[in-house]
Length: 482
Image (cartoon, rainbow, N blue to C red; front, side):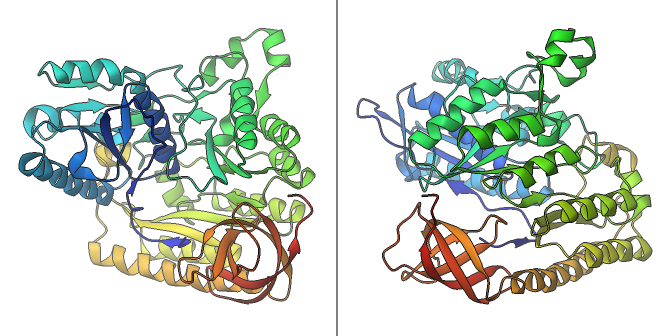
């Protein structure tokens, strides 16, 4: 997997285990963040119980769903092109096919899709997936169907996701939904609603179920995992009104992380995404305490300029971020740190941009996800700020930090030369059928000769070479924690 990404993640068509009695076919694609891919597993679980098996053949599908992202304009343009493709197939090959849009883009463009452009049959927001059977019934009766109402309590904690396009080794486990951080560039609070946490008991049940099925690596997933707080249900803001007993027995993210690590001590535990203002040192200390909690923190900063951070409503400064990085590396010296970065935010000057460059030089991230700013209608920046940085300047700044990140990534991977790392085999290498590919605890991809090993094995690998994104080595022996 490429660690340096400067544009939208590509869509993925997802395959599902089949039920013999199911007669209808579902084709589902996901775009955007990991939460969208996790949500597609929830949708597949709901639909398999409605008589749908999935297919990777678009032309035979009775129902086509695309799970969408609104975080950047390019993501929306990609989805629009896919909708054109779906409707062409519907027109030319399968007139009875129904087309639906799920997720963040569905919530934002519901009226345009259904009433103005008439390019879909149903629109379903991120909190309305349980209503899919009712919406499909509406469609079957010849009516457009829509549900994009945002929930204050839905977490889908009672649904066991069907694992899609799985390698049988790694899986997402959703722990929170929504976001209360009103960053001025971000549509997530408007498309996914307020922050709410999932019952920890249902999380542990899912983790145990995954282990029983042979999974070895889970990622606890949320828009802002560090804000996880369970005190018996409800929005996080209600915690102040909770009873003393509820507060005494509450579970924050550090406690949840520890529970997961102790429940399945041979299973790797990862998490994403963290927010600098919410990541507390008790989380870092828990990571350091348990060997099976992976040594990687994805810590989006978005800009190195205090002026731009304030304009973004990021509730941390450059200095606070650097201090947090220092604390993490003191507690976990080998911890990998990755970033999200935006260039070309409104009013960003060359001085502001050089602040971002200097912050990258200070941290030297292991890898990163970098983007040009694109105005999102409905956001505070979209409503109140002029997108005044030229496209040429955005492209140049983006290329500059992508190039710099590549240099830093190579520096960080070279630190592993001649060292032995533990790798969990996830799949065959894309470049060679004679090699396995897996990840280290730091989320660094490592490839090595297959020999007698298999997917799902933990293998000790001696690193002999590397690129900016990949470690290259040879297996020493199976790790003791298989």
